[in-house]
Length: 328
Image (cartoon, rainbow, N blue to C red; front, side):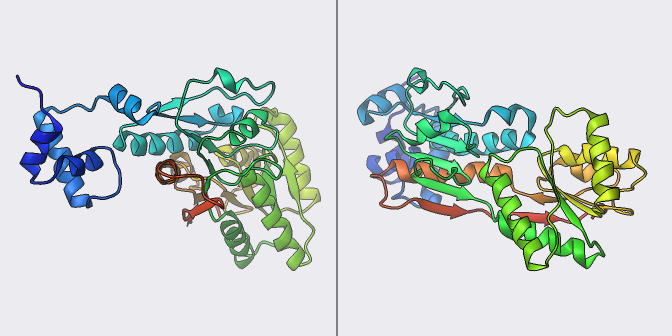
């Protein structure tokens, strides 16, 4: 069976070979209708892009590196974000390489060659993230890097301040008087933004901030005792949980203390997931749209890889949605 060429596809599509190349490589210059037609013809004819040849011609590796915080293994948010990023890069015929998290003693020179990096939620104590940002390669971060880190080429961010205030206002509207914020870390820009928004909101209302810091490894008995002190002695009557999946654990511990989420105490998760929807009671959550967030990071990096470094960091926003359920 003869090999299909760009010229063959161009003839069938009624366009130039150059336009076919743009369409197959996910570049600008052709309409989405034309791109879809070219991809359909390529698939039907069994055409396969020679990745190695293209990478050599363009002096590129044909891959993008993904760097996640060391704690990513514990949270489903990063899985969804990675899936969205993978989908977008696959459309551009690029591979995704997940590089090792090296928060201390980083050796990023041992990473495989890539054309750019995506850093999701870089932490302030992660030396590896700082070193990647200091390279000359295009870098896009999901949420802003910590103060003092080199600036990325681009940032995709969620409206964390707005959604935090939306949750707190909802607490008050439903009768809460002393809402608290529970965090499992304070080193990501996301957690820092939640805490800053919470403290500013409390200051506006002359309320004492009530922040409880735990870890994902704290034993249930210890955390339950601290929750008991927080809710009974300090009077916390509504809780925003700034962590992925942890609200389910908090709901169980509250029940062990005789507090029913949604009835005796309001409970909202700062990150949505299926388990929040199907928990009893269903838990109100902030949907950060992680799959779309990952795609947005990939889209921005692809754009930035086509040119020189911009004079200023390019910022893109992706909306977040409060999914109201029975818990708060």
